[in-house]
Length: 134
Ligand SMILES: [Zn+2]
Image 1 (cartoon, rainbow, N blue to C red):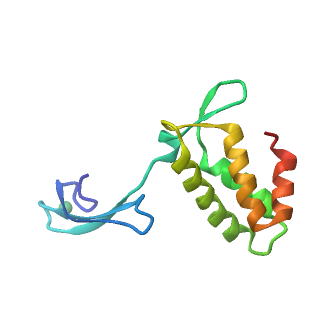
Image 2 (cartoon, helix red, strand yellow):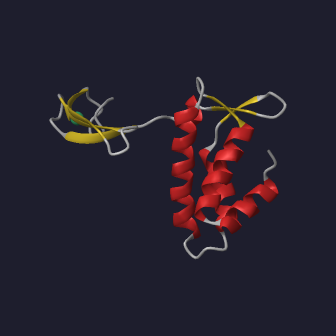
């Protein structure tokens, strides 16, 4: 990665796995201007996870789509936005841990999402399943 200040070459001076260990924090030093900055490396879900639709077609996984469907199901809650963000993170990490070579069945996403919603808020799970058939 090049320097964010001058575009010069940088080298990693420090590296650490972040809390979830699915992220890596790096400290970089620019050999040109001498500045130092940090980067975060994390999985590219869009690029690494593929969803197998019911008709067998493969589509890139969209965290945004998942978030929207979770949010729609949690709208009755005052804290819908924060809840949906946290729930989406939980669902994505569950999906990532169980994926077989980056391919995941659409029905599996629905199952996992419904299960996690049910534990959190039964009404949200009912709403979700009304719009997502396994
Ligand atoms: Zn620089």
